[in-house]
Length: 392
Image 1 (cartoon, rainbow, N blue to C red):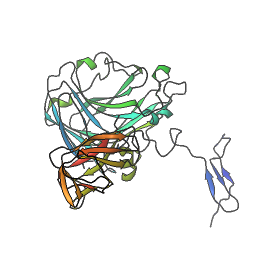
Image 2: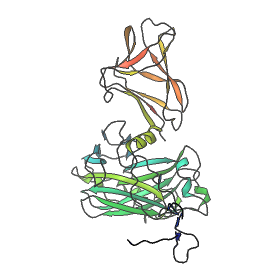
Image 3: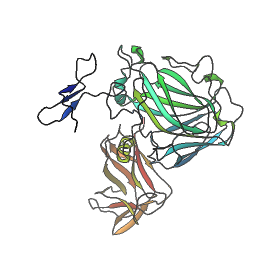
Image 4: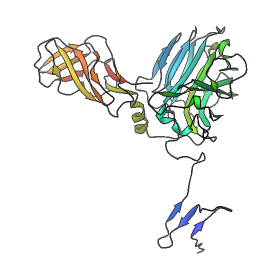
């Protein structure tokens, strides 16, 4: 049997070995970096880029002057448009993916107003953008990659919006030439303008925008392909009108934004990892439509005030981006207390006290309650839902 014995492997002209070999046990140490000179894991700045997580539901319908969350972390924004859209979590995907986000035009608009816009986007907080070094002499490029399938071919625009200090922006185009699934890649330039630096905090530092509809106001002049102070001019020059027919569908998945000039393979995180990242911004506490069992419950020692006010302490896991607000369904007697008796109440009205780590929910229920007794909060109503929100 042939055998090669070496102490190290070194590139021609290199001063450092790429691989060193331990002569006693044969183990090796590799000097490895990613294509963009950064880490292999946690490259993707976009959360839920594979459209797996849908805590709010898997279908919405939206239209004029509305901003709606779709899959977790994704927003569809419509301004002054007569068109309408149905957005669903789809299983039509390229190989290697389980879900995509599908936007279906259900009401067409063939004559766009000058200020008409339809975009979908994701907001990224400053804690997660620091390695772009924006606003410094060491600033890095941004590479955005994604898979799209649409029967509306033509030129589409993507845009980065800097949201800290002086707002900044840059745009790029990609061309859809067939109706199949394809991966598209665009690279945005580095930004060394110190006025455009990202703050190292939990606020919105960067917005990644995909255009679908753009009126003449944002198609004025040449496409803005270099960073500038944010303005509408040239933001979406060349964008096709996706809303010109009710037969138009747009599907997207595998969205990745990373440091550098090279698009690496999509970073597939586990479902559990992706869900934990999403829960920093939105957490479902109770949802009868998805929870199993006859009764969906929220346990805890519930303090009862003299006027029938309920105070329910809860902890958030993981801790949230900021102190959240309450999102509660309110369809009438959907929730109830249990302690021998059953007393229904309509909804949770907010927090008495709250932080990023936990809070005390407030609700109001009639009936005699004993201060200090253990009460179980539950529901058996199919539409009942309680969530907390700390979105950007």
